[in-house]
Image 1 (cartoon, rainbow, N blue to C red):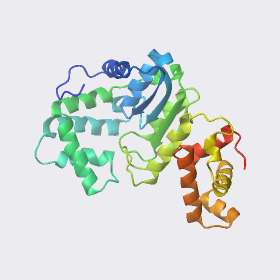
Image 2 (cartoon, rainbow, N blue to C red; image 1 turned 135 degrees about the horizontal axis):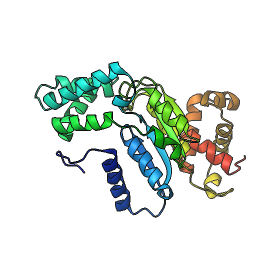
Image 3 (tube, rainbow, N blue to C red; image 1 turned 120 degrees about the vertical axis):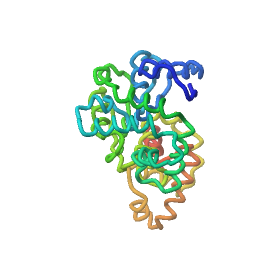
Image 4 (cartoon, helix red, strand yellow; image 1 turned 180 degrees about the horizontal axis):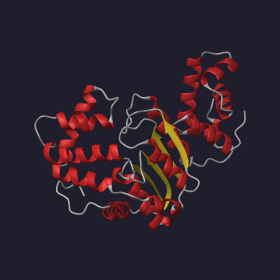
Amino acid sequence: MSDLQLGTLTLDQWTQDLASVIDAARSAEPVTLLGISQGAAACIRFAIEHPSRVARLILYGGYAHGPFKRGTPGPESTYRAMIELTRNAWGQDNPAFRQVFTSRFIPGGSAAQLQWFNDLCLKTTVGETAARLFEARGNINIEELLPLVQAPTLVLHARRDEVVPISEGQLLASRIDGAEFVELDSRNHVLLEHEPAWERFKEAVLAFMPVSQLPTGHPKFAALSSRERQVLTFIARGLSNDEIATEMHISEKTVRNHASNVFDKLGVYSRTQAMALARDHGFTI
């Protein structure tokens, strides 16, 4: 699966590859699948073919239609031109072409991040294989499969994604029954650590995942100080740190410190998870 020279490049093959990874993991429980970009199609296909093996789907930057199937002549022509450039210029010492490719994925990236992506492209595959991969992506069309998905689904997409238009993410969410859609304020197809969209992504994913089950009165709640219990109560009510500071007549920095301690003691990673945990288990002061 990591060879530079590949055989068949089709959705069928990608789905089989995914099945091989899941089989090798030998999970006793249904798995959560994270499908990013082209990977969304394979995850969707696997979830339909093996509904008992998939607990939920998380799809970021995904699409139902590849560039050849979207009915947009301008972008399609550009995509075809990039395929030919990829085939002929990918491996050249001059990284000018790879820079064009990279800039679409992380237009908000620093010079160092762009250089890292350029180098990664060259290490990952060769020009002919990359061109064939882009052609295979271009022909994806799974719209008719979307209503067949049974797993709970979270769809996230950057508002100004320069690789996959947000309309494709919206289509996934609208055609998958009960899917939740989260729009992220970003231009980057690959989210960057420093941008708020990355924090929003993590928060949405953690909220979508099941919280560890704790019975009411669990010792973890007892481990909270009186101040921390107050903070957790306000978090459960949906108050922001600034609003909690006003209610408790303390600084916002102190609230942040208390909230951090609460998260550590409860074993959660965000205020969204803390809020869900408190509500689910009837936490009170």
